[in-house]
Image 1 (cartoon, one colour):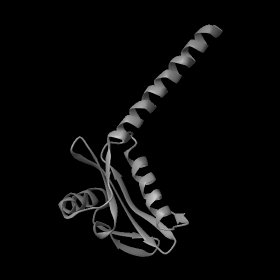
Image 2 (cartoon, one colour):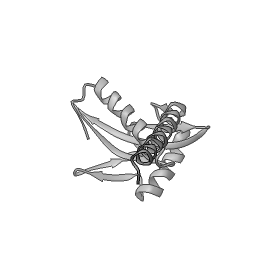
Image 3 (cartoon, rainbow, N blue to C red):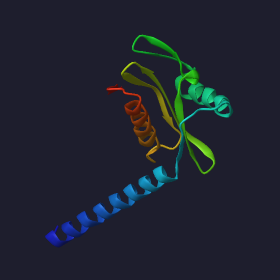
Image 4 (cartoon, rainbow, N blue to C red):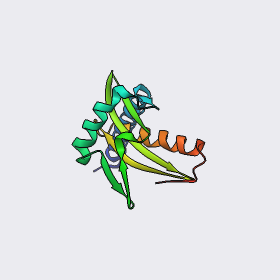
Length: 129
């Protein structure tokens, strides 16, 4: 393949990846992260945890969690719940207990993780896992 075609193809790939990145950034910007899970979210959360984890009961690192009763964030976009993260803060450690996204590849999970990391830092956590 001639060098100019190779360069042209490489530029096309860069443009495609930039377009995908712009879409991801737009999706994250359009997603509302609710920092408090309220009672109106409970039913959806229990259903989500049941569908993805088998139950709201999650065992992690030797601890048993009732994930539907943990602090968490719900990602909302277009009036619909798109993702959920639950976490536990114990002293200076933050543990992400569950993370689920309805629409994969849209940056929703990453946005939820970043939001929990920010919450953990503000709470004085030095470790987030």
